Length: 319
Image 1 (cartoon, rainbow, N blue to C red):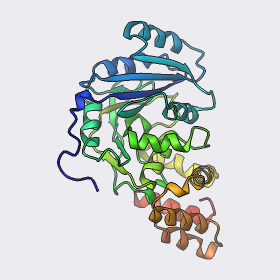
Image 2 (cartoon, one colour; image 1 turned 90 degrees about the horizontal axis):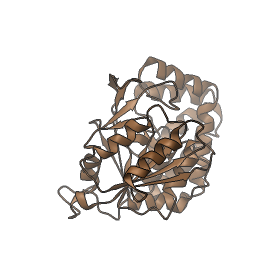
Image 3 (cartoon, rainbow, N blue to C red; image 1 turned 120 degrees about the vertical axis):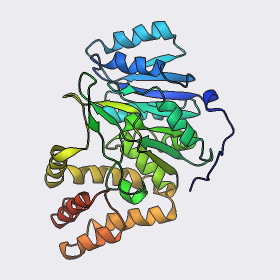
């Protein structure tokens, strides 16, 4: 558990933040996101933008900002063009990107001015050698940046046994320290994973790190038709999740994550390694004992409704 009071004596204004920006056909809203970086109360940041094969004006926009900010402020590179997760992994696993803290950024959101300062203030309470991941709630806005609501808040503390079944926050809210980044770097960019943010949650919680969830939103999370994930809130989102469960998509996601975790299980704490093994074995058991074994392993989602879905899915062998 993090100690109370200051742990690190460094002034947060002196800390260097690498913003890892993934882009793909982001022309409509990219400028808003880039402009929101400039409004940050903390100014010691640099942007590393990886474009994954845009066919619109995204590259032109990035190059325009680079000509204004300078190449030391904004680095532009070509992504692997293997999907958004691989694009973000290519950034976080690049040893040439060196900073005190790292922040994932999507291309179509808007950061509030104190987004970075809020994250670093919390993260600086954690000893530097401890992997630490900050994430949080979001303010939901429509295509035109009009407020439409908030994302869900957590019901239970972040932990590995929760991470095995769900991600708790979007990558667009995540900021993490060098110790957390070093774990991601060591596991490599070539692992097949579901998403970079879920993988970050799994790794940091699984390897004995600290996951800090902030209920105060510092991101204006734009909801539109081009969102790959979108908000997890509401009846529609719940029905979408059920559809994925009962059509096998959720089981595929779990298979992917478990295969990735199996390749780095020696980095997990003993307790979390035991949880991983128990859950993996429980999924293979016969119907009569499968559901009991899954919940006995300690895994859980954040809500009663979510755990009810896990119960039904386990009966149908969809988990």
